[in-house]
Length: 226
Length: 131
Image 1 (cartoon, rainbow over the protein chains, first blue to last red):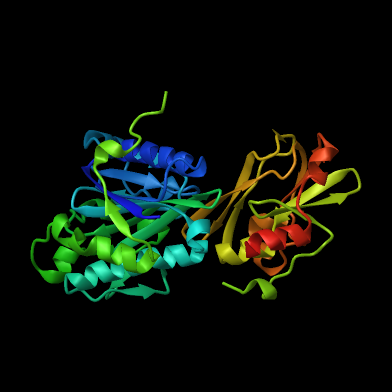
Image 2: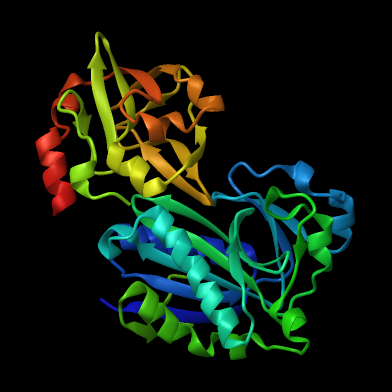
């Protein structure tokens, strides 16, 4: 069965999270197959299941003045930032059908980021300080997933060319003293998300061993079924 | 990830499709996750448990296991009221990796004993995993 790939563009965090939950529900009900969402979010901070607000280094008033929300969600990991210029990929996949363990899936998300970075000429690597991918001493991409009845959702965030300033307002992933970087910074030039995702279908096909079919966004369950 | 032949599936407990186990202990049932589940999850770093007195139906989510960057839901094999939670898991969640059948997560007073009898035997569970 093909994995369906859908490019959403820039959409707010809550809308895509609700969409993911419906995709998980449909998959568990046998009404839909695996779907990979590709998106970018307006500026937002998210806290993982047991993420702590003390890793947020600025006041909520400071964030409110900038129209930035802090949202508590069910994925693993601590606090992170999403914003324009960051590539976010949510593979909503039946790990049992794919015969992948949770740890293998997390490694696969890192591998996907390593390959996308390599396509831009950036050599990144895994690091003992935690999951995600790193360049020198700086973090380039993060992972965080949730699993419901064997279906994985949430996913990865790769810094293509976002503002790195909001990361200085937090201890990213709950690690103090972590510097963040981006593909644009490592390359010393502007990089568009569209350029980075050109090779995405092929990488997904190689890593998940399934054909990949691109679909239109209007085929997704944006609203609760009546 | 280990081969099934390297994993342990004792016949003294019963299993669910979501990889929990349940074991009768006098008038209560203890619940945990199988050796297969802990192997799939990798190193467990946090266990989210319910409160004593919470009441669940069979199949309800009653907590989560967090392995590195992944939060997985866990479900009730049988319905009932929580009478104890394994406090040792608060500081040493890795007990689930080390001894999945010793590291029970919750103990419940069962509503309907019939639900326990419907759970899979070790043999049935292994057959499902081989599926």
